Image (cartoon, rainbow, N blue to C red):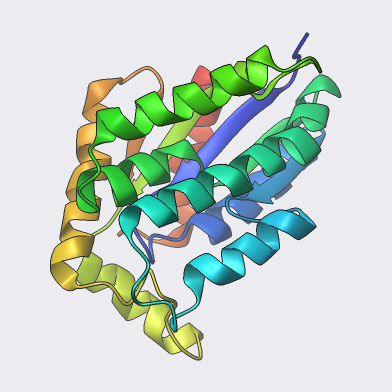
Length: 220
């Protein structure tokens, strides 16, 4: 039986997910909680190598469907190898992106359709549930997904100074990234209990304070 809590921090590129996840980890540890921070895709050897393929700027011809299935593959490995055990050990898991990103980037913005992404992920979970080993991927969905909202123009102004170059997903058109932002907003409106929207254009400290308020109210 799962005992821990699963928090996802998501949003458009440049919204500050990684920074806020790290600050939230420090805050929760100071409160005595056992915390694990992961990133999706990534956090396992297999998932990190899939991540390299997904973000490699050389693969400009990669389709949205290919992206989706690669993200699914990485995510299943992450859940089975890292997240499942952490939750069973009563840890709070903070994940930088999760299914919400696939719904938005490949579903809304990539043209696959948000409901199609959900149905295909459900099928992946069902296949895993039908396999002889247990427990399965299917029982591990986020308790809370925090969406950090920011305009693409602001997000990319933050990315450019701190990185040597932008990755393949970041190289997509401004119109694509505007669709991404709109998709995240629509996602939060679809289920206000599971998704919370926070303005990420404020200072790092102000954003973190808002995240802590939401986490304390809805998760802890």
